[in-house]
Length: 351
Image (tube, rainbow, N blue to C red):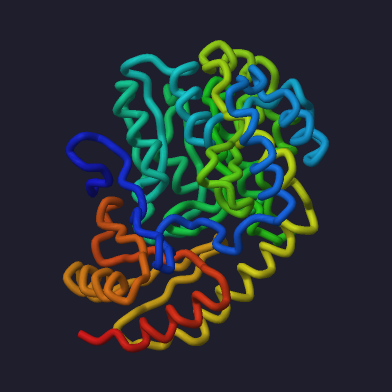
């Protein structure tokens, strides 16, 4: 298994550079947030001396109404990664088995190590794989399975029928965590984020975030959804006041289906521009169903050269060396103005 963390077992994030840079290293929504939400953030700043709601009750009600789901089955976290941490805290003990794919969100591995769990890692070397192949690594002793759908950084997805068959095939005592951070970018009717499977299966926890399509990565808001017996266990390990007043207010006011669909369509359009216009023979482009593409270079050396070339041109992209993919770069889909500049720059990259 390739290394995906540094020796201190910490998450390796995207570039911190953003002032004066085109930042395409962290899969953010560079279109920004509506003016109305910016105003809400400003208005709530004057109440910063007052604690937020204990469990973000108002936001929970808004999420429930927006998704037509049950309030009592929702928990809010400071980003969906805090919800993932709660899941490890609530449902594992040292020595328990957890399972995920090799090229997946690095925090699964970080938390597995921090909570002293044993990891079963499926090698998704072809990036896209079938869940029946993933299942060959599984055994009934596994406490937690993590499936990101779409997956980061490979962009692979599973459609509803395959996912339901997989859930039916595993032990009911195994909890399947469906990480749906990028789900809003999918407009495929055969895809599901898993939210409406929770009523049918008692061993599913779905995690969602406001950091991607909603553009609130800097405010840290995420949430989880599961049947009551699982959610209550998560509340037992949740910190009080874990999401700030400003973050909760922003998330509450950004939930707008028309705006979200517009962002998804913009992403498809801008990604199509990259795929059709980036034609440098040194770079192989791999499409995904999320808001990023993968750039495959001929070697780790060439990948590093491209990363440095981008930085010199005031563009940040994400090297995937820490994921065990040294000759790959992940590049977020920016605004139309940004990607026109990026395509122009990358077409001039030469080795």
